[in-house]
Amino acid sequence: MLLRLGLTGGIGSGKSTVARLLAARGAAILDADAMSRATTQPGGSAMAPIARTFGEGFVSPDGSLDRQRMRDHVFAHPEARAQLEHIIHPLVAQAMEQHAEAAIAAGTRCLVHDVPLLVESGRWRHALDRVLVVDCSEDTQRRRVRARNQWDEATITAVLHSQSPRLARLSAADAVLFNDVDVLEALARQVDTLATRFGL
Image (tube, rainbow, N blue to C red; front, side, top):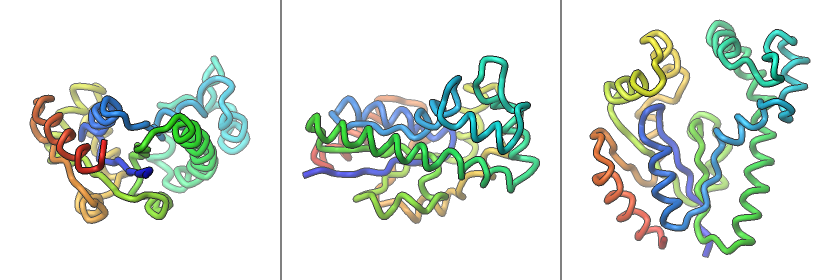
């Protein structure tokens, strides 16, 4: 029996680590972020419509999306986020479906839809059997993102505010992994327990 598991969590929660641990247990990971990035690489399927919608100034010399300029633009103009999502989301959905079909054909028993904005988008829940939320405190999020991305506090705050509130994510969860301590073994034990429950 195939399990379609939604995996989400705020920035810095450890969601990507959980995805890797689930993959080690045999799950097929459908990484929406990676697929989204692929659409905005040189020659990516989103680049022509982005250039038409936002202008050539948002295209880097190598033909990829100028991410910093787009990030600044979206934070300054909230309506631009909807325009960008209208371009990218259908392309990501199509890519995820193609990867899912390939994984099912290869015999996987668990598809993990790794979607950062799963709760915010409202378009994934109906296609999933369970939603797993990786959770931690906001202080931990900020500390991890500072160390990993070298962002200033204003940028971190803007990203946190662009994501679903913590309580909204938790209310959408069928299962929660609390990952407030940077100890991989502790997180791995939680994932193992959950994976066993899900038949992995």
